[in-house]
Length: 542
Ligand code: N01
Image (cartoon, rainbow, N blue to C red; front, top):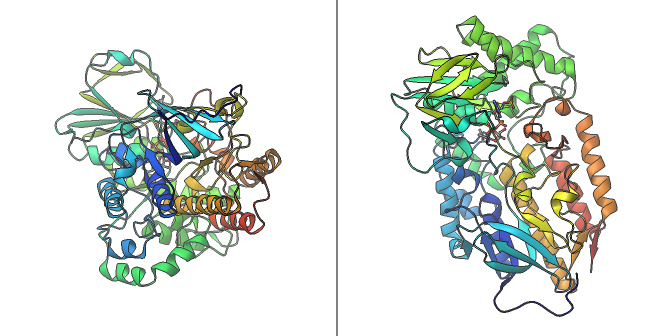
C-alpha cells in the first residue's frame, strides 16, 4: 500500500458497515446492525430482495426444513403473528414472509437494489474496505459483511452446440418472475438434484411430455407435506422460545426429532426395516437419518438404509428398467444432499414422463429443436437446466476481493477455502462472512445458523466499540487448526465418499475439498461462545 494520506473522499459513500446481499442473511445482518446504531446499508444485485428465494422461482420450489423451524427467531412478535400455510413452505410463501420482515422492520430503505459489487479492496492506511459496483459506483465501509449466500451462483453446464437450440430455456436458479406455462409443451429437464426433482414433479403435471435427463441417480425421500395443523402450530408457538433453544442443542439446528440411540448393526433385519419404514412414513430427511446413530459413519449401516430406499423405488416405479436407473449406487445415502419430494418416483408411472440415461449415453449435442443422445434427437419446446450451483465459494469468488498485500481471496483459496470458523479469513481484516465455508451453514437450518453468525459478529463489533478497537483479523494459526479440524471431523464420516457440491465436485476444475463444518450446530455454537468468553483468542484485535 503506497498511499500515505487519508483517502476518505467525499465522493465515496462511506458507512460503518456494508452488507453484501439482501437475502435472509443480509436482511437479518442489516436489522441487527441498525439496532446497534451503526450506519449500515445492504447492497443487492437482484432487482428485489430475497436472495435464494427470489432467484429460485421455479415451479415446485419448496423448503425442506419445516416452516416453524425455518423462520427468524429474533422477534417474538414476528414468530407469533406469522402464519405458515404448510408444513414445508413453498417459495412464494417464503418470499412473502421475507418481504413482510423487511417492511415490518423498515429495512427496505437501507437496501440498494440492482447493484452488483464486483470489487472489494482493503485499504490499510484508512482501515476501510473500498467497494466498487458494476455500475462503477464507489462505496467504503469500516466493516464489510458478506451475506452472499451458499447456493447463489448457478452452474450453467457446457454442452456441445448448446447455443443452437431455438426453444425456451431456463435455469432453476435464475427463474423469471413471470408464470411459465408448460402445458402442451415438450419439456426436457437436465439435472436430478433437489431442484430438478421438485421442478420435474410439478412440470409433469401439465406438460405434454417431460424428458428427465439423468446423469446421476440421487436418493429422494417423501416430504409428506401437508397444510399446517392449527393445534400443532398453537402448541409450537406456546413454547417457541424453548423450541428455538432446543434447536441449538441438535446437530442440524432443528428441534423436534428425538436423537437415535442404537446402531443399525445392533438390531435384526426385521426391526431395522420396521424402523426405516416408520421413518419413511413419517417423511422428512432428518427423521430418516435419525433412524440409527451410525448411518453417516458406518458403511454397513448406510448400506442397509440405501438398500431400503432402493427397494422403495423398485416398488413405486412400475417399469423395472426405469426403476433400476433411478436407484442410486454412486454414493452412500445422505452424503449428497438428501432430496425431499412430493411424488417424484411415482411421476415416472405417468405416460407423459420418460427418464433418459445420460450417464451411459451422454448428451452429444443440441440442435435447433432439441437434444441429441445416442444419435437420437429428442424434440423439445423448452429445456430446464436444474444443474446446480458453484456452491459455498462461488459467490465470494464472483467479487474481486483483495487484501492490503494485494493478495486476492481467489489466490488465497486456490487449494480450497481457508477460514477461521467460517466467519473470517486471516489477513483480510474487518471482513466477515455469514455462514461462510467451514461453518455448519449448509448442513443446518440455515436461518438458525444465520442468526447465530450475525449475533456473534454483532457482539464482536460491540466489544470492539467499547474497548476502542478498530481492527479484527483472524490469526493464521487459528485458521490452520480450524481448517484441519473441519477436515478431521469430515474424514470420520462417509461424507467424503459423496461426489457432492459440498466438496465442489460438481464444478469442473474446482479443487475438491469438503467445505462445511459437520461437527454439528451445538458443538459449533459452544466453540464460538467460548471464544467470546475468553476474549477472542484466535483473533488479533487492535
Ligand atoms: O443442484 P445439485 P440443485 N450434465 O447440484 C446435474 C439446495 N436446494 O440445484 O450429480 C448432466 O444438487 C447433476 O448431475 P451429477 C439443496 O441444498 C434445496 O438441485 O453432477 N447433468 C445433478 O443431478 C441442494 O442440494 C431445495 O451427475 C448435470 C444436478 O444437475 C442444492 O440447493 C431445493 C450437468 C444438479 O444437482 C443444490 O440443488 C432446491 C451436466 N453437465 C435446492 N451438470 C429445498 O429446500 C450438472 N448436472 C428442497
